[in-house]
Image (tube, one colour):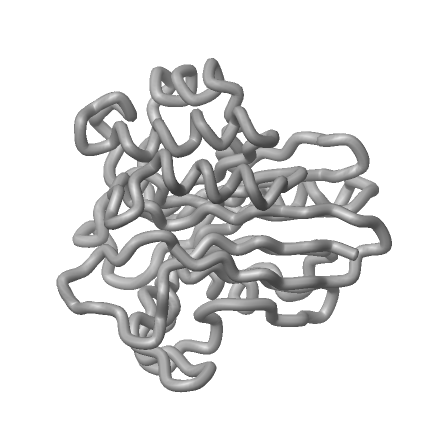
Amino acid sequence: MKYTHLTASAGFPLRIAVLSDFHSRTGEMGTDGILEGLAREKPDLILSPGDIFNGISESSVREDFNISGLKLLEGAACIAPVFYSIGNHELGMTGENRRILESAGITVLDNEFTRHKHLIIAGLTSGYTMPKHHYQGDPVPSLEIAERLRQEEGYKILLCHHPEYRDRYLKDEEIHLIVSGHAHGGQWRFGSRGVYAPGQGLFPRYVGGLYPGKHGILCVSRGMRNTVKIPRFFNPCEIVILDLK
């Protein structure tokens, strides 16, 4: 697991760790090893923009195939406050699963926002509320949370699993920091270019790192696990450590 250190200006200091696209897989480094490394980074906040699990619409986060994702978030909540939004592999978050996560100290942001000190932290849930075969194209997410954020004052952070949503729906919104995953780093990378990303297609624009925008920046994680049979090339799995200065 690579720790990718990035910096951005914000007018105040804050260390953020980004956990994305874990898909409930342990890989070579077990969950305990990931948590030990995360603790050494000493984040002030841990943000998770989705796909920590790999299917929870009709299953519990305590099922065997989800338990490593639950263990990751539970352990992370012992290190720093955790804020979690819902990705396309977590469609149909049930009330029981939400109660399990919240009882572990995890703040679930399902098209809603909360205040944390001087920050406003929101979650824009993936537009995929049903499996992909139900859609002819990419479904539009609910954008009510963006409308609600316009009325709020403060430094605004939006957890948004899909980085492509920024250009499609959010480019004119005054959001200081958008945190995303989903692109898996473009799977194969050549220099700074990725080859393919879901939602963006071939040679995607947003695959990993920081991307300045009209009102703020987009931070995209390459994800913590490979999720397909095709191996990654020049594209290690990562945890992003973003230092606001």
